[in-house]
Length: 191
Image (cartoon, rainbow, N blue to C red; front, side, top):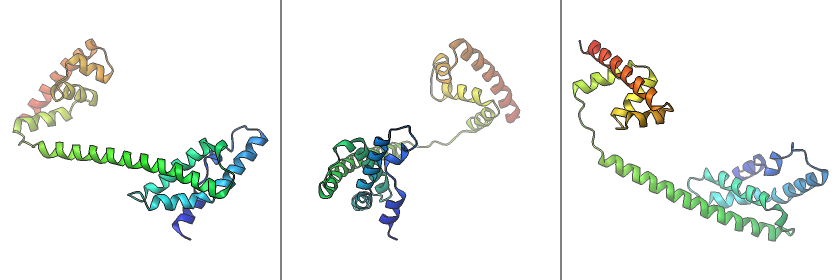
């Protein structure tokens, strides 16, 4: 069995998702009619996308989006097979355009991240910083995060508290206690 046929038999129309909904018999007939009208289009749409998208794994996602759009506009679905196929390809073309725009956005974001990572240099870590990092690991997780937000991210204690979902007074108290615990842990590791 070809991949397109296998995918076509596995992919179901969005109508199946709503089969358990409480609907009238006339609506169920409409669902069956939609499924019968669209079923022959599934392998064609899958092949259409497989030839046009990279990676080809995205072809099934694009096909699914097209089927969802066909379902959404099922009241306008042409009755004649050739017209229905052409209409489905028109929708598929719009889905493909959206896919390409999304892929281009992701590629630009990836490139920007790579460029930023290339500029960032990693400095040697002094012994004191290593000891401090080890001491930080000995604190409870919430204290670790509070200290990291204040020291590494350079947030105020109140702002760090907001990030963690606590009021400023509680954040200040927790931060003071965390620093005390951190000093004790640092001394223990250093000696």
